[in-house]
Amino acid sequence: MVFEPPKRLVRALGETAPDGDDWLEKLPEAAQQAVALRELTVERVQVPGGRSSLVVLVRAADGTPAVLKLAPGRARPEAERAALAHWDGRGAVQLLEPFTAEGVLLLERLHPDVSVRSLPEAKALLEAAGTLRRLWAEPPADFPFETVAERTGRQAEAMRARAQADPEVAPLVDLALAAREELLAAPPEHRLLHGTFRQSKVLGGERMPWLAVGPDPVVGECAFDLARLVRDRVEDLIAQPSGAATTRRRVKRLAESLDVDQERLRGWTLFRAVESGVRAGRVGRPRDAELLLEFAGWL
Image (cartoon, rainbow, N blue to C red; front, side, top):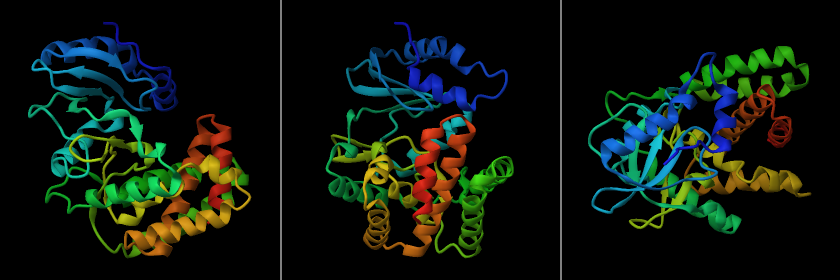
């Protein structure tokens, strides 16, 4: 089988690829080797798939359905492996192989085309929040993960640079950076977080109705993790005349349902929305940037 990377993956990785990166060129051969090594039978490449990895639906030699995932180093697949091993199936997809191969994960097969995003909005938020709660575990003693301070520190540098080049975004960037400084001064807890949690990252399963996939794990406070969920379906929020009020109610409802401080959730939602909007503008996605920055302005 020829492993053709989906257009979505090619486009997304092209936005972040460093000069000289040849991971996509080597991907078909790497996928063939991974399949042969594990004696897998390939069913199909998942399309449109993710933005940072190739996802292939396969069957093991004994017929067990599984997912083979290949990701470049900049997507931090080894951190994902470590987090999934630590969760050991509690709220998240299960690792299926004890040995490791850099950038390659063999995972439990969920229902790839069924996410909580397919549910009505209120139900989707409820199920997603319940899944997220199960992931908030004590990190391992010698955790190999970034902290929230480290990750947002890198992001803050890029935000400042963008604000200097584009004065229109500077006021929101200043607000977001001030919120970050205040939030990092006294974090209330230290947990292993999913890192990039949203409705589309929660898929239907057999062991449990809903399980999380695709973490970019980080260690820090729970409000940081929940913040990305606040802006799910942002395009629908922007289209509503009452979008700003709906957003504020969502912050309140999610904070109360997961015992997270409402103001801390609002602050991290602001930072993450501005960071995502600035990044979208930087890589040439002006429509996404406009939506995210308008959303951030409501906070």
